[in-house]
Amino acid sequence: MNHFLDIHKTDQADLRRIIDTGIAMKQARNGRPKGTPDDDQPLAGHMVALIFEKPSTRTRVSFDVGVRQMGGQTMVLSGSEMQLGHGETIADTARVLSRYVDLIMIRTFEEQTLLDMAEHATVPVINGLTNRTHPCQIMADVMTFEEHRGPIAGRKVVWSGDGNNVFASFAHAAGQFGFDLTFTGPPTLDPEREWLDYAADKGHPITIERNPDRAVEGADLVVTDTWVSMHDPQSARERRHNQLRGYQVNEALMAKAKDDSLFMHCLPAHRDDEATSEVMDGPHSVIFDEAENRLHAQKAIMRYCLGI
Ligand code: CP
Ligand code: NVA
Image (cartoon, rainbow, N blue to C red; front, side):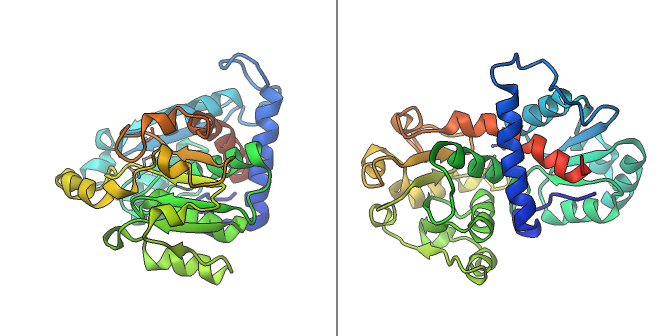
């Protein structure tokens, strides 16, 4: 069995296989009604627990649908309704759940919660987002880029905005998939040093360019995310807006990237803050392909975790 905790903790060859499997599984479904089962049913007889300590639309629905398409069953659990939210340890929760279910996906706050779950579970654990990373999202993003534009290796990806958890998984992916990543944002919202060091050690140092116009020159892909994440204090909202206003992805900025550049946003978005509706609904945008590909990429991740 394999956990899927982070992109930098997963072998390069396994990451490549997951992307290729996700694309193949998507093609195999080709136009079939969404509720119908896949031809092969690798999760038949399997029960998957989906634990959410934070809100979710895409992660919740795409995992649930993905498990059912592959013949398995799910139970969606809210952290606050479990004993976990009332003092039971993660370790005990992990041991107990492992007696009932075959796979655990958890969306949580502290990275340590995920690590404790993985350490004490005897079934695979998947990271459905923590305050620090969001690896399933970036697997879907890599898949989306490659479907539209071919191999991502050697291409230029520019992140504009907050150096947050989604950026962190892009930094890990830059090291593992071999693309050039540029961060443009204010110094106060720089990514963690550890993520920059990781990509540099893997031979793909991240460029920091404070000027967004210069940053996006030659970009194959421009990415942004909400200016205020679920773990950020809501009181930070106004300050964040003042700091990040100049990093909005709008048509003027996209015009400075390559003509055939793509635009991504993991969603949910605050339209006309981090990106304008013109860009989100415009010709460069692949945001809904990204959302769809959560389903296909995660089906491949679950197969990798269970070795099936
Ligand atoms: N992108 C993403 O993870 O969305 P949800 O928060 O809706 O799951
Ligand atoms: N950075 C965002 C991503 C949401 C999918 C958050 O953590 O809230």
